[in-house]
Image 1 (cartoon, helix red, strand yellow):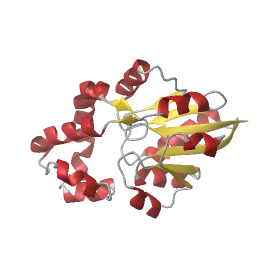
Image 2 (image 1 turned 180 degrees about the horizontal axis):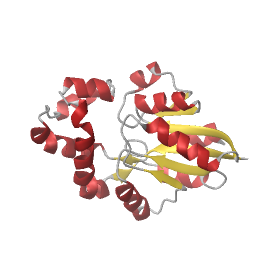
Image 3 (image 1 turned 45 degrees about the vertical axis):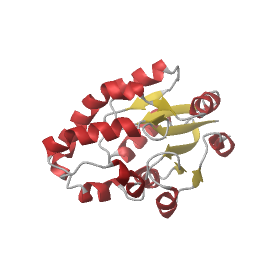
Image 4 (image 1 turned 45 degrees about the horizontal axis):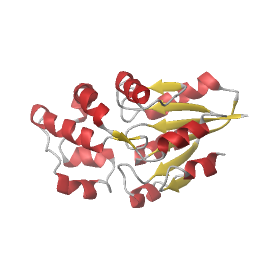
Length: 205
């Protein structure tokens, strides 16, 4: 029986930190929040998105508008980003006998364009989500493929990914090569925590 494997996109499949960094800082004057300095990035890896928003004075009421602007800014920068080493081969391996999906705060258009460029095949993509609404998208994907699925895994690089998996009752796999640090990911208590993409094959297969 097939398994459903849901990936976060930014920070898990694609190394888009630089693209996001440029876009976020470019919009800082317009939305009246504090820009992120490169020297701060290491420290910020130990914070959740909500904690960073509070520290940088990003108003929640402005968040939907900010996200829409960010997606437009990322359209060109995104295509300059690279895949994490080994992730393409891992997805190809897992795609043989399972169903692969992506949930992302990026736009579906940007995501599909990037995946096509790198010749990566995915069954489902849900983009343009609220950054705190991933659990809703997980449930939608599960309803689409149920009851043919034996197990479901959600793979992400942030605390909010682990929380979304827990909220929906599926297994979470936290990766340490993305945004949040290993220490803060551990505190969120995922089912698994890994440092290399190839470890996914052993866990899932």
